[in-house]
Length: 137
Length: 140
Image 1: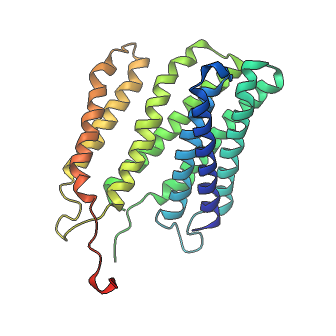
Image 2: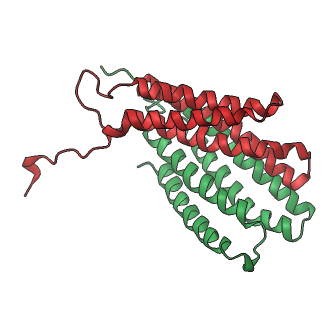
Image 3: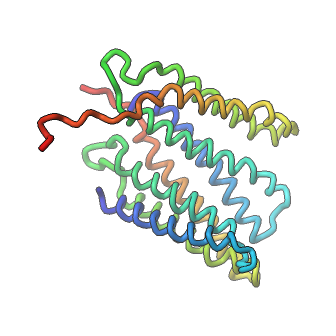
């Protein structure tokens, strides 16, 4: 398993753990944790499911070429960094936006949105040419 | 990778672009209060990400990867999976369009197509989930 995929998979497992913990805490409305619902949903859907799919697809899909079998490697690391930094920013700033909104918090959420979006776009660009039929010789 | 899988996966990537864009706009709107109209994207964002991106990507890879049997039609009757592809995408496209054409009730008619499409995929590929026989020479 390539290093990049290992990082994706392990990070997705961390997101799964955090998401399920937040999901469990969400069951207790008396705790009154602000902004918890969208954070736990996105930790599970984007941090766990989507990140796992990204990592495995980068590993498993048909090779692009002999020189760059999995495409340009630094793009893969860019996807990883944008996805996880975007999620971390979301976990920090989305509850803060409910508790005490400020310019810093709003900019943090905007950065989170941009980073998560960028991760998805770069993934589409890198994986699209690899989603192709390979005729058996 | 079979052609049908390519169609499923590329369609799922298109939905990922649309759904992620909707999601980014919704999150940005939470922070900056750009426009209350952006909240209308939320149901579509959820549908696109679950059915358009996640489900179709999984279907594409499953159709490719699940065990095959025989040499004539190794993936069985592929028409089930082909119909599933069309039904799921017709349903999703009409759901997205229903917001913009001012006919939100359209999804009452088209959402069942998604359920039927997914059922067709299950019918066509359920038999491919089977245990391979453990080779005799590896026992003991």
